Amino acid sequence: MDTTATYVCAWCGQESITEVDVSQGMRQKYIEDCQVCCRPMQFFLVFDEEDYSATISTEPLDG
Image (cartoon, rainbow, N blue to C red; front, top):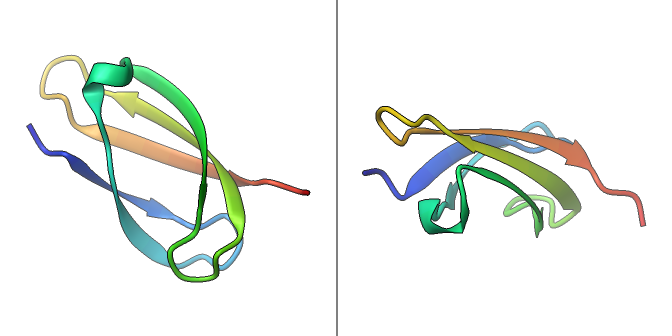
C-alpha cells in the first residue's frame, strides 16, 4: 500500500506529495499547509477500497 499521494495546491496550483494514513479512515478531512506557498488548505482524502490508492482534493482555507 502506498503511503503517499499527490495533490494540487488550491492556492498556488503547485503539485506536491503528502503522507497519507489509511488507519485514520477511508474518508478524511483535515487542514494542512502547502509545502510550496505555505498557505492553509482543507484536504479531502478518499481511499479506494480495492487497492487503497488515495485521491486528494483541496480547497483554500481563509483565515
